[in-house]
Picture 1 (tube, rainbow, N blue to C red):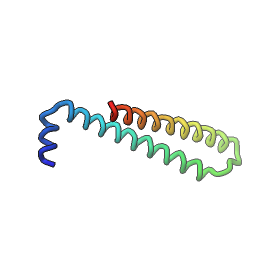
Picture 2: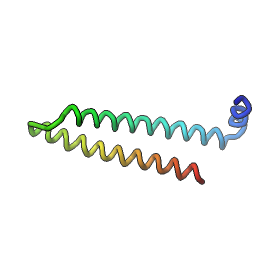
Picture 3: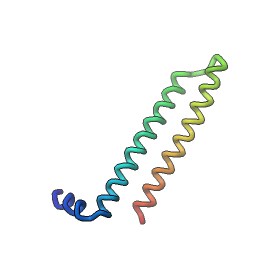
Picture 4: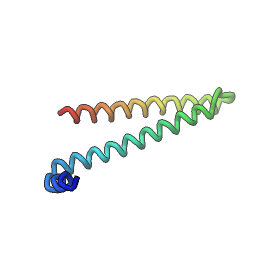
Length: 84
């Protein structure tokens, strides 16, 4: 393990790649946490009974969908970069 760490220190490309992967993983984790938040809000809201709840549900569904698409994009980019 020590040998690998030393190689990463000596090679800016390897450490830059590792740093980029770490940033991407952190970004992905934040997006997934946001997605879980909106899923929970939708479950808590249940069937809307007021105009405000209907509006909230609509917004949460759109945000949920947008975050899901963003997560897919991040994962696709990660796969593409892995196989370059």
